[in-house]
Image (cartoon, rainbow, N blue to C red):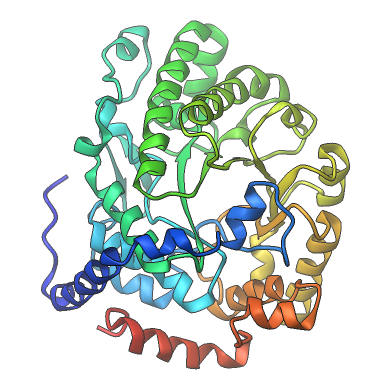
Length: 412
């Protein structure tokens, strides 16, 4: 990938953002003195005044402001430029005020530090130029020795976000699980039918286990680096879990995710760890043994069953079908209410069951976040949660104008 040069249409706006971020950093110590944000408290297992909310892939092409960047800049030119990635991370927070703000990045971001190059081909998806398919390939991999040197933009992005939002929202970091990263690296691309990794799983399991172990060790270092850089909660995404049978999940995915969780918890105790496995149907009982502080549930999982299996004291996250956000306001309200009721008023983080889809109406995301704020148990708590202003569909245009006036960059 060539070195990033900001196009002329962003340079003046980014300069204004840099001034804002520098100002925020000078007062960053104030954030620590404030009360811990809602999502962080719930992720730790504490009872709270209402259900917190954020959305996976909440920074994405469904937002018009986001497309002003994605239509002109390649993915890694956005995700590996700290000022641009910070702005993209903040766009949904300014528009919808979710309780979590996740850095704009990719699960493949740490791979070059291990000697595995990648890029995203427009209209095709991720492409791995050096697939890992033998024990020799595994042995040639680098170790994650110094992410601050190889991935400095991650530290800058997370630091910017903490400085910008203070205690108003929880800053989230994330990684792909060892199995998901292995799947991409072995297939060399996103694959509907991942035959290469299934071949290795069945015929050369020792190679796959060695690769998964190497990735787990690297991810422990990388997640600790994210935490040190400002992430208050971190999530492991097992995006390829749906391609595994329950038995395969128990052998090749869950143990290595658990190794990462154990390793990070030992080195950075007190930071909540989330684990989200896509395609959790048939695996719910097996996930009871995972010690993540929060278990993310995809939209194909019955929330009532999950609460029964996992217990009332387990923090769970999810799991509204993201396609629901294309429906009417009445349907969105009904499905969110169903999720909230089945999960219960305690130890639940409202989210979609997978990433927000392209072309999702922005007003639907605003309503989704508003409904979580309305889950406060009293009108006084609702008012406090809303900071005095309830977001609703009729206010969306006003919100967009407020965002442009405050930020400067969105309207450039």
